[in-house]
Length: 260
Length: 99
View 1: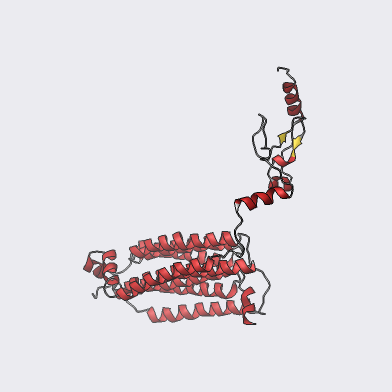
View 2: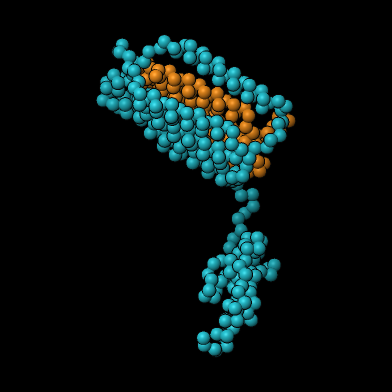
């Protein structure tokens, strides 16, 4: 177990490329104003960390990183961002005066302290490598499985309990009670008609042959257009397509029995 | 290249995550920074496992991932609940709790 394994040139390249991209992603996450951009930046960081795990002779953890972090956790983040609102961005008002500058100073100081201390402490450290440990059980996954189901069995079962608790907790936290009884179909229908609602379907948009897009208003028998036939959001944005007068005269000629 | 470079990288990522927690006001981004710090710690676990030649570090990193997944589920549920009542995901808003 005394042999020291020198990482080769390929690993050096992987480290500098993926490590650099991971740092870029982390910085982008902290700097970008919009939360969605932050989520995408940190997904970049996590994928690069997965590659670094694989380079660090932890192929199983690399795959778990891709599946759990970039797959499950980041998608959950994006999902919650969609619920909370994609446009949610930070307010620039500082509630505590000078907090941002102090935090930056603290962070830079932490970086310098950690890098200097660890760099000095690890400068002479050799590396044993995992080849022997992996070979003992026939592979990385087998070795991890043996440890997990023997030495770490208590921790493994505790994480099982933790996951169940988390799932139940999430359901309890996001559960919403109805404070009023739900409306029945009869009450919904009465609500719809008592204040003078339209008793049938609304006219569908664009019912003549030239266009069938939803922004085309329907033509009424007298040649005018029906405003309620286009969806309300398009009406609110004034996005209804203008009607060509020639179309209307054509329709009128055809309904009066002329042939083209 | 010495594998201790991985440790230095993880220190840098951890510090960036710490800065994010301190600077950002959006609860979701603060949460992402916490995830970054957990990932940085995982990277050093994996590297130490390799340097010491046994797999215990990798097992611990695996457990950290499981705990992080559970933490994300609960944390995001709390954020959604707060957002539902206060219409905001800013961490300045729940400071009213102290009165």
